[in-house]
Amino acid sequence: MLAVTSPNRKRARYSLVSAGGSRTKTTLPPRSFLIFLLSDHGRELEFRLSVSCSANMSSTHLPTDGTERVCVSEHAQCVPSRVLHLRHLPADVSEQELLAVALPFGRVIKLITLRAKNQAFLEMASEEASVAMLNYYASATPTIRNQPIFIQYSTHRELKTDNLTNQRPQATLQTISTAAVHSGNMASGGEGRGLSPVLRIIVENLFYPVTLEVLQQIFSKYGSVLKIITFSRNNQFQALLQFSEAVHAQHAKASLDGQNIYNGCCTLRIDFSKLSTLNVKYNNDKSRDFTRTDLPTGELEPTATFGVALPPYGATAFPPTFHQHTGLSVTAVPGSLVSPPRVALQVTPPAVHSVLLVSNLNPESVSPHCLFILFGVYGDVQRVKILFNKKENALVQMSDATQAQLAMSHLNGQRLHGNVIRVTLSKHPMVQLPRGGAGHEEQELTRDFSGSALHRFKKPGSKNFSNIFPPSATLHLSNIPSSISEEALKDLFSSRRFSVKAFKFFQKDRKMALMQLASVEEAIDALIALHDHQLDHNQHLRVSFSKSTI
Picture 1: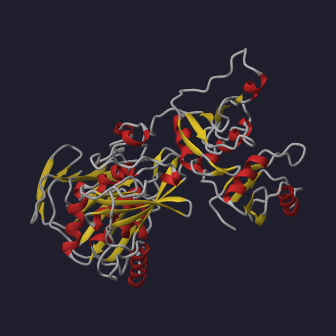
Picture 2 (picture 1 turned 180 degrees about the vertical axis):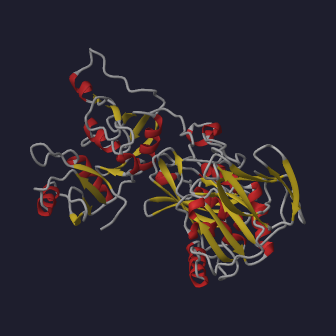
Picture 3 (picture 1 turned 120 degrees about the vertical axis):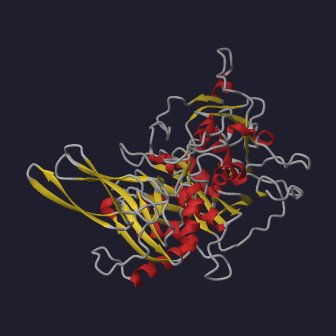
């Protein structure tokens, strides 16, 4: 058995331990190749080792054909090198993923992947770049697809790829490197100036509201967050977030892109912005400059995600807290994320009441069933009560508080039966059913839907959780029988006086289709009218909102 006992920069001492237990010491220079023989039941096995040292203590085990093995332990830091050794990589790691880890620190001139060993070697253009990279990742664990990886200096001073079976031609490497840089969108000013410190963030599958404070707490783990601007575009919640340094932005993108803020939803899609800095004029719930507390809150009343109206911050209330706006304490939003290795962000959703107050309804058209179908797009509605003396108001009880937040985020400010409705949290913890002495009309205004077969989210892990979108003019139709034609579906909607502007079956699944109507208001009315409409003797149409357009 071979054991390294005290390697140093110039020479390293090794001990050869025989099967009988005797020890022979020898001293060899670094980067020496050791050839030794092991006896295995009368056979001799030859191994060739290249002894290397690293910036971190490591241990390598080489299995033999028998029960014996070679153990090489390294205990000292190595001389910096342009060549870096990457270990614990995903089995199918790509060159682009490896380059994404290194490119913020400089140009990569050579790359060798050893997929069978989950390892790789890459050579930076300069020793300064490799030192900067290793120094940074010493305090911020690098990850690829949420899997922590290990990086150390190699004893190789350069990589020679002439005779390697997995060599990658220089021209191809440069193509990948360039593609990786451009996929991140270089900062304004052209190539050579590095990646931008500004990230563009899109939140998909917005099941729970996402606020500026939530983003700040998540991204501040990867560096100093200076500014954030949030906005809605193309029916999606988006944000621009500026770090103090571009390398922090790169690390945040590599670690958080594709992650879910909440379990199973609110997926982060992150890219580099073409902007090199953000200009924040107001400190409120939609924008924030953390370097300036003197900015005004702005004259317009800020609105939260997708039109949820919130009271503006007072001049003396900065920095704001959740308690001021939604009745939540700041502790309801997590202050820390799960440490690597991290499967998901696992942020705890805010805890609030599950009953919503819906006001400014059209009393001539609204019904408990109508509200059940509409609010059921965003959660399982348990009870609905239209107030007997104020029929323009109603209480809607969702299954839990997070579904109530989601429905409020998407439906507040939407137009229903000609009226712009307002959706807020109710102080009532639940909707009470009418007492036995209540009149017939009062009983008709309150319905219990707790056992309804139309609940969309009663099955854990249902695909419906990942297909929740704001109201839009385009509807997603599903559960369409093969006997139903495009014309039949168009006629169905037209017969209810809905204007069909476009229609398209899914190419790979004719049980689904997209239908575009004249407006969002019309699409809302159509969803209420035709969701669960019977198309044949045993199939009912399912209708939901789509993020796509035709």
